[in-house]
Amino acid sequence: MNRLRIKVTIAFMLILILLLTSLGIYNAKLLEDTYIDTLSERLQKEAMIISHSFDWSIVNENKKDRFQALVGKWSNAGEARVTVINIDGEVLADSDLSSDIMENHRTREEIERALTGDIGVAVRHSKSTGVDQLYVAVPLYNEEQLLGVVRLSYPIQLAETKVHKLWLGQIATLILAFILFSVIGSQIAKGFTRPIEKITEIARNITKQNFGTKVKVKGKGELADLAQAINYMSHSLEQQLKHIHEEEKKLSDVLTNLVSGVLLINPVGTVVLANRMAGQMIGISTQSNQFLSYSNLITDVTLKQCIDQIFMDKKEIREELHLYYPDEKIIDASLAPLFDGDGEFVGVVIVLHDLTEIRRLEKVRSDFVANASHELKTPVTSIKGFSETLLDGALDEKETLKAFLEIIHTESERLERLIRDILDLSRIEQKRLSLEYKRCKLFHIVEEISQSLQVQLERKSLEFSNEIPQDLELDADPDRLKQIFINLIINAIAFTPEKGRIWVATSEEQNRITIEVSDTGLGIPKQEMHRIFERFYRVDKARSRNSGGTGLGLAIVKHLVESHHGSIWVKSEEGRGTQFFIELSKEKV
Image 1 (spheres, rainbow, N blue to C red):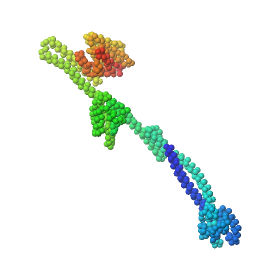
Image 2 (tube, rainbow, N blue to C red):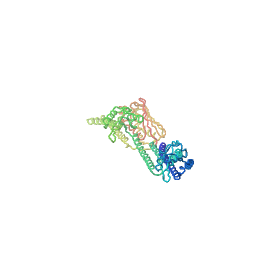
Image 3 (cartoon, helix red, strand yellow):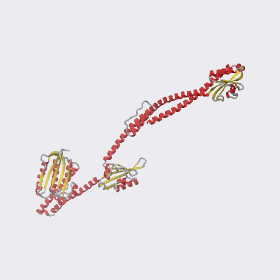
Image 4 (tube, one colour):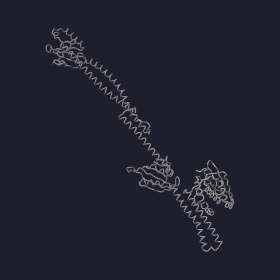
């Protein structure tokens, strides 16, 4: 902004130079004219004095030397050349030259004018002296008879020398005035441009979103009003930008944490926005891959075709997509065109909903209904079949009657267990199962369960070991812990061959307990391990059903462990046994 000050100062100085130069020229010309006019008036007065005091007797007496001396005296007294000329133009006497060598002056301009009875004034080059002269001629009378002319002349060169001295004085005065006014003008320009410089600096800071400084202008006037307006604008912009940043932060947080994927494509097909979930769904980086064409980013052919279609038709599209990259997913894609206030097409917004889990749950529910129906159908069919047989005439055969009734009883118990497990699982999943936390000793719980299952263990000659420290305690619901251990141990008994081994052990780390229920049973195939906690899923369907299991035990165990804010996982090697691990907190969470 110093350039503005320099420009204003230079402009002020140029105006000042022009003004002072014009004024100096005018004053100098005026002084020159005034000096010439004054000199002319002086010569006229001196000539008039000589005219009134002229004694023609000197001329008549032909006393030339005396007359010449008198003319010289007049010249010395007035510092002007004096020439006396008769009516015929003959030079009678001259203060500087001899009258004998001077030519007739009858035709001189000032002489002609004086011979008419008026005062003659002329400026011209003198042939006698060879310089420019100012001539003033007045008529000479003798008793009112015009007899000649007395002429006074003064060299213009002398007048110009004096005028030049006036010029030099004028120039010196103008230079001093110029210096003085330049200093004053510079200060005025500085005082005028400093607020403008400050305002410009503040405006530049505003463009850099730096709103800390304010313009301070003293006094009143347009600059003060402008400074106040700039300060108000700065504060207003600061508040607006703060509000915009807050809204952008909110929008960014919403988009980042949105469970749906969002993509924004501009009219030329460039992806200008993609949130984190969209990147996860379609396998793109939301940072490095933005501002690239959607045809290069999106790998799914169906989604590309939908985008191509909406660019052509400008109509909403909704499509369910089966994606295989980066993971297999089922996606509900909603595509809509975007238009501005003038109805111009400005892009496409795409919203992606992951339906994979919903479809999986739908399949699980469908499988559950089918499996539950199948599991319920088996005992019901048995009960119905044997009861119909009895009604058809087998009641009289006691051995048959007893065998059929035992089968009906067994199937009804199996049906009861199945219904109970289904109800328990439903309550657990719907969070309707309340837990009553107590301080529990794991050793005693496992010991009690092993005693209640002693018959089943002895039937297969299985060795059971309770390796839990007797003083180990944790906060849990004892009844649900028993249910967890019963399901796991019964499951181990069912799938462990005769003379096998089952054991329960624990390990501690800080405030966490890891419980291990292991066996030397058949093991679980690696490709089946991820499904063992599904409802009604059986690795060996025939063996599981013959053991009296409902297929819901491990699903119930998993949900009960999670209800205690714990986790469960399994390790198994086919033919060598299985290990179930449960991690729980010692203290109530």
